[in-house]
Structures are given as C-alpha cells and as structure tokens.
Length: 120
Length: 109
Image 1 (cartoon, helix red, strand yellow):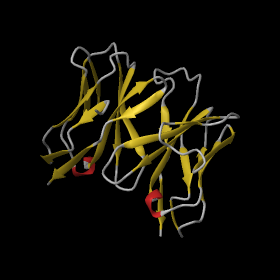
Image 2: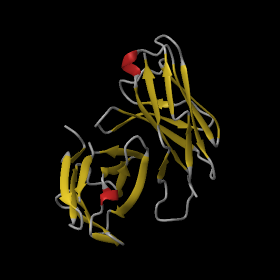
Image 3: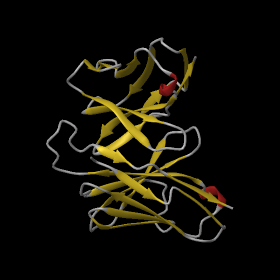
Image 4: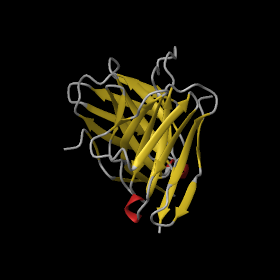
C-alpha cells in the first residue's frame, strides 16, 4: 500500500512553454502533498506544501507564479512549471501524506518516483 | 549552515558493514528517517526511529540515535552491490522533512 505515482516520468520541452506534472496517491487519500526539487548530486529541497482544497504554501525563494500548484482532490496534486527556462531543468519529486494513520509512522510521507524535466 | 549534514561518499567492499552518519540540529525532532534513492528514481523509506529510542534494528539495518549529540547513524550489515545508492537522512520538523545532502554508497565486489 501507500503508492504514489507521478506523470510523466520524464519530459523535454522548449524554453517558454509550460509543463504540468501530476502526482497521484493510488491507494490512499492524501490531504497533504509536498513538491520537492532535486539538482544532480544534491539533496531534496522542499518547494511547497499543498493541502487539498486550499492554496499551497510556498517555501522562501520559490516563485508561486512560476510554479503553480493545484491540489483539487484527495488523490491528485499538479505542479505546473510556467514559461519554463533551462534553469528550471531538474528532477521534481512529490510526496503524499495521509493524516490519521494509526501506525507509528503517523504523518509519514510517501514519495513518488520523480519527474525529470529538461528544458531546451 | 545545513540543518542536516552527511558525508558525501562512502565506499565499501561487498560483505563488509557500511556505516552512514548524519548530524541534525533540532533536538525537538520527533522522527528521524533514512531513505534510499537509486539512480533516476524517487525515495524509498528504509527505516525510521522515534526520538525516544536509542537503537532500532530491522534485518540488515541498524539505526543508532545519540540524542545528546544529535547524531544518527545507519549501519548496513553484509553490504551487497544492490545496496549501492544514495542514502538520505531526514528529520521531521514542524510537519516537514528536512533532508541531508545524501551519502553516495559505492559497494565494490
């Protein structure tokens, strides 16, 4: 259980276009989803936290107009990179958290497999 | 500086034990985690420890927590080539996860 998928797994786009990445919790309802960005050989940097039905909370330095997040249902969050540029090329990873779990790992985040974005 | 710090590389021979170390800064962190990331993939939770524990063992994995020194370690017994990956420690802080830089484990046959 607790599977999170991302689509697409990789995408190549031209500079100036927008790209949408989907994050889905397949077998549980995720009231909170997180979006991370990872540069090669580096750690995961939290970009934003999205709660179902409300606006996302962005980390300092992350442009909310650049990285649009929508969490319209309990199983789907989307990240749209608007007017992408080569510096936006990165590995984007989402995670999902289900509240109310009774295990000792309450509030654990389950990670998706990541989406590799390359902007030409 | 970084909230969570790890050494960047570790190289071991197959069959040896690997020890990956991590230091964190927030003594109020309730849970500390170890994740594994294989090339081009997402993160896989390996194990976790609650802050009131000193040690946790799960098959080949042993986690040691020194809360006084804010030091966390992951020991992998009988390391195999399939264990080659990047290992991240993370602390839970206010509902978020703060990750270390990752330790790249290389296992040589």
